[in-house]
Length: 408
Image (cartoon, rainbow, N blue to C red; front, side):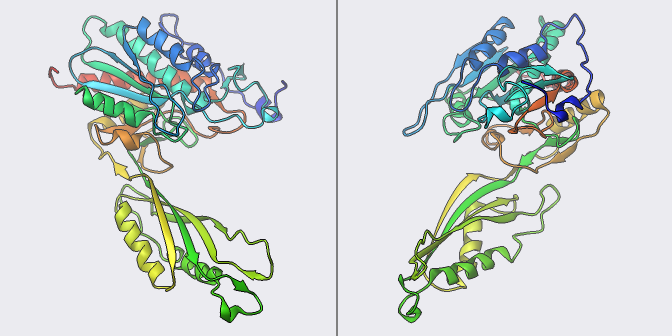
């Protein structure tokens, strides 16, 4: 396949790792990308990861889960060490579909290196970050193989890009049943908008999806007095929930927002007043709200319009915040040491599996830049893979340097 003109203009320089690095993160990322692990397929990605982890001394456990009416999903939990604090890296090897292959400049699963970039589905989200973490651990072990100051673990799922019911959430419950504790967790999602080092996520807004159905009475358009048009009422209801802001945001969260995503009637006849009209919406909300408080807010405004309606709400994830502290301090220091940037502590963006992990330990997210994730020609600058490896290494060094002496 030929390169696009945009690709030809990219001129990042490949920065070679020192010869004493035990694991090349670029080569390892390429190995992972070559596994076409589109959710829920694993396609050998976890086998590839497990083989490398076991060579470093990790004890690996595969955890396949399947809930009724869902596809089976394989997961991996790996741990090195059985004492001290357990610092976990969480991520996923599943990727989204490639879309139209003909639109790509390269084979999306060939992991080609072009003009200083590594191309392929999952290069950004988030196989390269996994490779960087494992390479960083290999570096860390060179210095601490005989005096490991704590435990290092990985929680890797194949169900992050899918329904997220057979992945991280169930692995966490499995760990809880074994009374195995995570003391801190770094999620390797792409957190930086444009440049590596810009942003660390210390929380996420919640996500609540809604289906609002105005209920009327079907009738002939020539005799509207004998019918009840639900469309008129739905328009007023949508206005009632969109014209008033939910909040103004706060120190850690941007203002919450409600976005209407569709309005559907399903009426193919021009002379019939329909019986029902439906609007779908999504609310991204800060930590000033819960599912129940949002439902009360919605119903108060919908009831003011008057008339029958149905409201169905689905909570996709609560908002949460890991207050700035030891974990974010260590991460900020590591990022600044390698990049010279002082990353912003943010809660912006969509949801991630951190929404499950926050119930078990402090969690923060840092990975690559997200400009091409889920897009055609997804790619990562090779120099950023090298830099992220060094950042992760610094995080390990700094976290365990401040670890209190404990035994578990």
